[in-house]
Image (cartoon, rainbow, N blue to C red; front, side, top):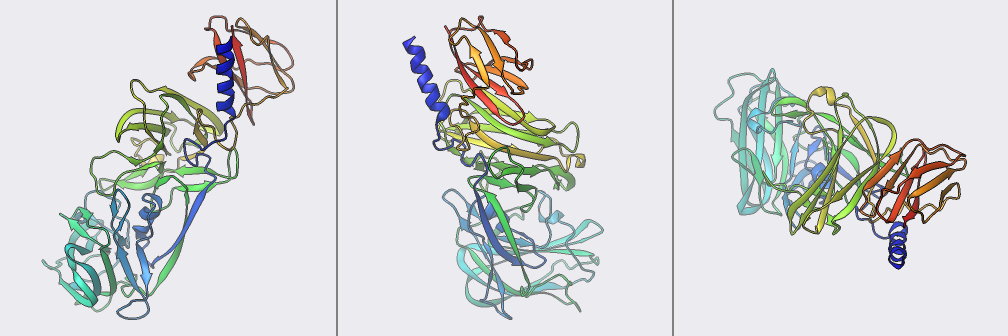
Length: 482
């Protein structure tokens, strides 16, 4: 009996604790805001990745150190403790992983330039060089992509002048212009040291009578963009689109909303899910594990959250998952597909990590399955709120113990045969869990105002938790079987 009372005391402390969340900002109440300027007609910049995926300062910026006019653009390779993040700007999202030699679309343009010129400053002599890239296309096919590397220490503006070789033989209908702060290895993967800084101004095509109407090569016209990011989360989305801070929340002011957006996989249109995670993939890696996460050291626990989901395709499912690491190595994984529900539903994912105690956890949420790439999946809409481990409840207190006098359980303690009475409370379902967070009983047949008899005598002696669910709240009661 003393052992039971001691366990009961410890459980009460755990349930009513208001300490630091095991999943930081799991209630999505804390957001960071960032505003930056980008060159007009060049909305695709590394600023999106810096803000959402790497939590680094914006690295494509407007500067007044111009060769001509008022402004120029500056691109700087940033660094975190674990990675470097190069800077880039493009006038069109390529939506392909097949490299710049396959890029199509961009600014409308129907002339055949002989080359491209402009003025630049650069700050790295030998370890790095910036890249200028131009991709011409016609009728949805790439005609030619040209690369120019510019490097060395140039503290004053220096002319670059690239002649296109071989020359264009077909008149294009569109062109993509890109500038990158570092080298482009084999035309595929940019990489370079932190601090590489390119200042660029007065860019134009040569050997033609006019420039593209949307070129903005003097970088005099700029637009402003403001992003909101859930604190302690990394967002993987389409240039900052596909996710939203929503007031349709279970508790508090906000929840997170993720949508599946139209993208491109291997040069083919495809649906791509928006994902948020406590971890991130390093910028310069092909096959690697997520980094980041938060300290976590429980082997047995339950991941819990609320969600609502409107899939665009009946066979689609959103996903919530958690990976556990020890000394940087993945040791365990849990995940669950989420299906359509018009109102918030409560979900628990119990787990027992066998053999090892983790030191880090990474939680990830996405709006569709990675396998669901058909465009019919575009538009799937997921909302998540109050995600946490039951060992460490949220400060919003949804799962705190409710000593509500509308619910009566007796006798308690008991031999397993109990009676439950709900006075004026519409209980939709009931679940009972043991001390290992394992569900041992559930029913949807709980009636108001009368005694509901439940036989738990088959269960082992110990402490159990009874959860009552209605449309607005969860009530938790403790029972002891002797």
